[in-house]
Image 1: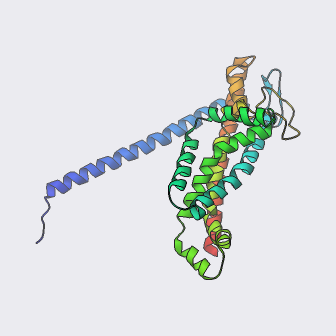
Image 2: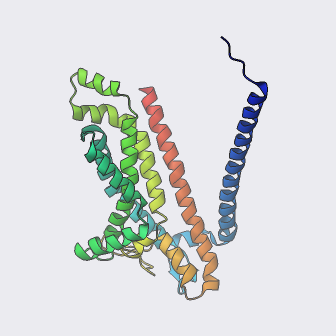
Length: 294
């Protein structure tokens, strides 16, 4: 027996659906406009000081003149150091949770703790880094202490990205590899890891984009107020863009003269984060195309 649907009811449902789509579209446009407004504001305020000397020279005259080269170098040192820690530890942890750990309370507990770790405020990481890396391990205020602290901050993102990437790979790939005589380790290394690598690399680079703008963790572990020379070892302090921006915007010797430099520093920091995001997209597409070609 056919069921007749009231045309007015269908018209009402379609009207609600159309209204929801319009709301979602307006919200999407609003977010995009807000992002472009923030970027445009920083670009307009900071583009006037961007030149070769600003990018390649050290600050001078109480940071009212000169450039931000030591802060740029220090930021990249910290990003590389945090990646060297968070990438192997995070990937191995994610593989263990999805491929080796028995499903049950243990994995659920680790996953819950990982999620909680991702939600901890960054200043707490900074206090922990100061207490453990700086004082207990006696690294002092140094690049290695700051890198390890930032690595802890990025670790939950890498773990969850790796776990989700391996979880989405069909079980048939594992079964087929094992049926051909490969060991579990060979299956993970030769079959699963190459397939999961695009998402893993993307997660890593996005996490580095986040840590590149963190101020609180490096405030207690490695950042120097004014250090015109480049660090010579991992046990030296360094300048960093986010802390340098905070200093010249809030507690400089001449706030009025330093304001354009602050906007210029913010502009460079945004460009670095944008490059990291574009690089993540490029690497993801590269690995995806490489897998398709095979």
